[in-house]
Length: 161
Image (cartoon, rainbow, N blue to C red; front, side):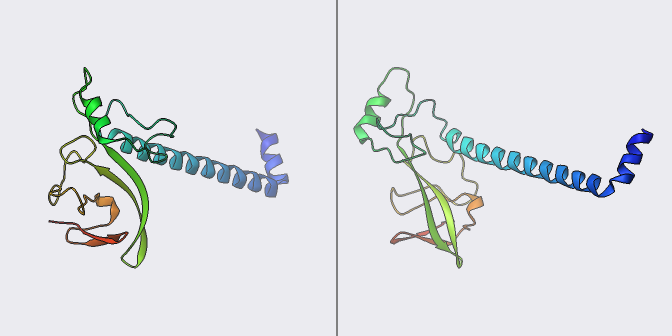
């Protein structure tokens, strides 16, 4: 122990630099773990939200989250008639950017059929969709508030009460 103290006193600058380097290394490792866990958590929330056991996608695509998969509506009906299938619904996922509040808001838009799998399980404020077009349900994390509007493409959407 006495030898260690003597070494630290003799090479104090090197000791402090080593401690600083290890501290920075631990900070980077913990930050990377946090970012990774956050990405995995967000991805799993999107996958688990529709409560689907099986996903049917177009052949030759990377799946519903990586790229668009176009399947005709009658395919959904055929899947719904299969033995053991309780429900079937069509879902589409798109990442978009829209001007909102003087900044650009990045949104992950989920299109779903009313009354089928894919939509939100509960709506805490406001109302459910009443029309199949030009209405949206906004997550509280999006920053949209009840009565607020947002332009998506050429259409203006209102978050209804």
